[in-house]
Length: 84
Image (cartoon, rainbow, N blue to C red; front, top):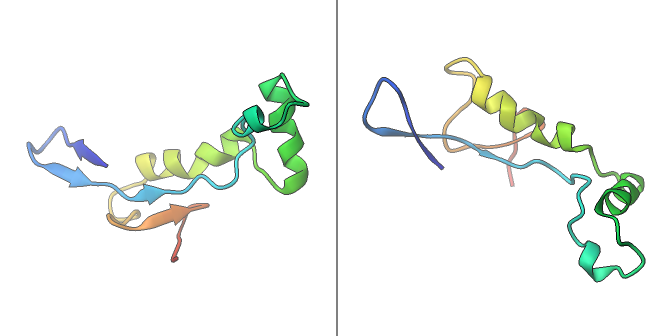
């Protein structure tokens, strides 16, 4: 992802962020037992899914982090560099 800085006309790179397994309605269309996305998302908690707020935490942290804390070109998950 490229973002333009206010102080420089050149883009700077940002890190990649993995939100984790988040409770969403994704996949509901394959399960005919559910017609409500919120109800379907709630069932994922039993499988270890995290809330939407928890899923966005690392993304917001990388945006708000002080210079030098987050490294460009790294993948972050739960506010830590994730190696794959």
